[in-house]
Length: 460
Image (tube, rainbow, N blue to C red):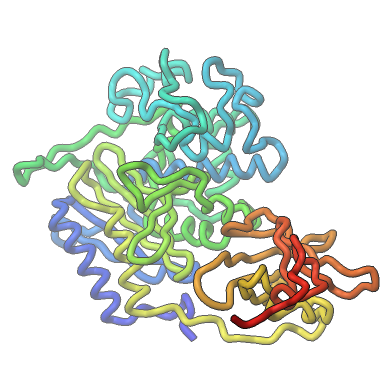
């Protein structure tokens, strides 16, 4: 069985390095680093540089821009899990600010708060932070462009507000909270707010000539929670492993999974995209990727995770424009997934002590009207209800302490599935959000809404 400790096949490694080499050459990047995570471990990294013999490695820092937003979102979700902040809380409940206090924490996380995309005044990524000393300087006189909750509109000031929310609730700086609550537990010692050698320099490459000039590296000040961080391929690999499986020291697996659920629709110009709670979503090559892109003057970056394949692709370059890190990171995932498909876990029966005979008796075919469904028990004590043929509403359900199950996905997400019994204790039917599932299709005497024709089934 393939594990994360097995090296990639030579042909796979060559294909990955070829993709990075093409990206560096065609994107005209001074340097380009790629990396792949499989089942929680960094299994490959490679780089190309315009300087022979001086290619960066997985420990070289690059600025990661808006990938920083995912870290800020993790801090906010920690507050939620501790009961200190609710996703539906208005911002003003925790942060004294006028004009935008009605928007909710969830709307800020998913970029549906209606805020402007950028700050007023000079280009904030390339100008001194002293020009924006307070939130009022970030928001300006007209912070709202549309009503909160109506549509997805990416907003850098929105994540500045979330960083200030963390500071207000924690009573420490955003940087201190990030270091103690996320970076240190995950062992991300090379992720910092300021560059620490070895680090790449940021460059602007002329769009019409093969010449370049250095980009300024401004500290973002109050805007730091939206894009300040520097990191490495190795550290982002650790972060990718966390985003795949969670880590109880930072966020439980269920919370990380919640962040990956679409919370905002795709943008009009990107029908294959979407946004969760701090995470971008992308549909590419038949698989769903979650993660984030990032850019600041002199740098572009991307982290994509294909959770179903247990893979993550990381792409980092030190050019303002030209390289396409999103496409490269997605291709790194695709190359490994296609060349070395993930081995499924071996099937194993449930432990004897976990077998519930009453639950076992509920498995098998059920009928919603004449639609045939099958009920299966899964390893965690939950159940799956799925059509036996053709398209239909398939859903997983988690067992509830008080009995019954709650839907986890699809049409039945949040709906309750219950067993309804007759007075003598025998099972009558299943009730799913008022839908009745019986053991036989329209059996006389069954609890079918509207009743069953007394003459029963007949031919023509």
